[in-house]
Length: 479
Ligand code: TYD
Ligand code: MG
Image (cartoon, rainbow, N blue to C red; front, side, top):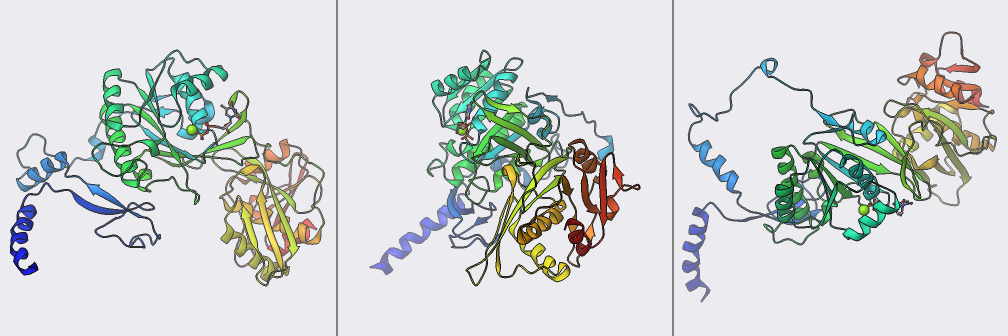
């Protein structure tokens, strides 16, 4: 029976093979966006587990055109791409509009570029919708702007706008998740700015996958990006963040957009930090600082001392550092708790800094500082929910650990910064003088810093600067 049916099936397969326009099923990794022909438990590209999901690739009509033209020769065609010397190309400085929020402009690199697509990621409830509603209400006074919501109802948004006292005159809102209809409305209204809140709710009719699935998110975002580039419309996409800290949906979203901003903060703290993770039109690592209050997000244009814990009498296990994320120095408090561990494998927990770096620093502390914490649990926390990524935090972390271990506070009004190398040397960090000046302005009296960062006279204003070259010197300066 099966033998009989086989020959009948074959020609059909052949026929289907000949017609090129056939939907293909691909399996796309949610982490790195890699395509696979069949499902597998682990992504072959990035090694993530259980990250593949089904994605129906429709034969794109535009793609066909390209394929057809590739078969023929480009030569002699009017639209043939030509090799050009870059210096002969005319270029214009990209034009920017201010978002009306200085801290947001700063993170974007000086305002929003026309036609730019910006992905704003962050935990649920962090304030993404609030930030973008505040921005759109300011921008709508000069530009036609459209707020597309798939999460909240229009009356909820209007209610929030009214409660925050925002001018909502120019803002148009649309509660819609189908990308086709969103683009239809956009085509009639011709907004200069679209906010899509959130990208996870968008879906396209062209795919049969469920809304929220990787393929839907990826395809809908791609349609919006294409629309933005064709029409010069600026687009803010809101994206939720997964437990691992990435934007839910394929990593490939990050490649498609011009800028990726992360909105961070601790749930207990009212401060929020907006950080550029990628920016085609400006610097990354620039920080924007906001405070969430009953009137929404307020800018904190001079944030340098807000990440101190408040208590200025020195406590054991605390060290103030000056970090310089972006273009401003920030005073940040690092806290450590070192306690005898009941476990055979003591815990190392780092909040606001990288865990592996902490483990490495503790090894250097043992080997080159002669301080053993092998039988102790070590917890390190950066106050205020800020995340410190630069290596200038190395020395303050170790000073905080030592201070907690000895149960002895650092001398009053002391700051520190510096990178700690594997051989126990203290390496300089960029912009040492800026950092020292900032600390001096805030009344700090002592600074323990790398030798190359110290000023000639050993002082900045009232502040005494102790220059150290080796970890052992730094530890004895702190005791
Ligand atoms: P929201 O912008 O809805 O967050 P997201 O879009 O990132 O999910 O912010 C919601 C949180 O912000 C909510 O927990 C309440 C708080 N909030 C205030 O504290 N004050 C305010 O004026 C507003 C609008 C929100
Ligand atoms: Mg929201």
